[in-house]
Length: 303
Image (cartoon, rainbow, N blue to C red):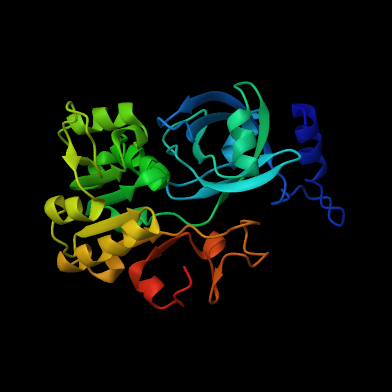
């Protein structure tokens, strides 16, 4: 599909035939152009796509907050829900880090800079930034689930936002050094004196590796500050990491309403209509994907 086709579809969707009012059909994507593609990991299965809107007005409509996701669409192939890796403080583009796991992601990985695709969103809720203002924030991430955490870190480090938060701790791990995302940014964050950065890998035989070796829960136990009324933990990672990190946070006295998690479920429509991602009465795509542990404990254990 060419860019003109995306624009015509978008324009034709915006007239309400009964009232003559322009509305945006939530099922139709904004046209975007791939501006840059970055291969993140040594296995080449994770790539970051920097996208720019074809229509400048669409960027204003796509007002998002750190923690939200969007649907990336490839004409004739389908669409996939992906967490937004860029920060709202970064203007002129959107970033998504995509794992090559299926039809749509494989096709996306084969696309080139300059190609046209679509984006729907923003979708879901976001991390509770208003509640966390004036508090310490501990970010705990593992593997390629670090995308919305990258968005959150960049958001908090923005000069206009950094004074709103107290101590910032980041614990991030991957299986090996070659599987870490955003390596240049990790190195820059590690040098800062206004945050505490703890990078770790499960194992490595690299003699030049200068950071931690150990699983994320272990490093969390060693490096995270104790929980109190002024400290929140944001956790996002593979289920096994979350499973073993939760007891560590319990040990450190984090209350369940101060532990914030982002769920990854089998989402399809992204707006709570298809019912693919429901947990009890909650829809991850609409009521989430961000929930406190308190909220999760009141849901069926289906996630």
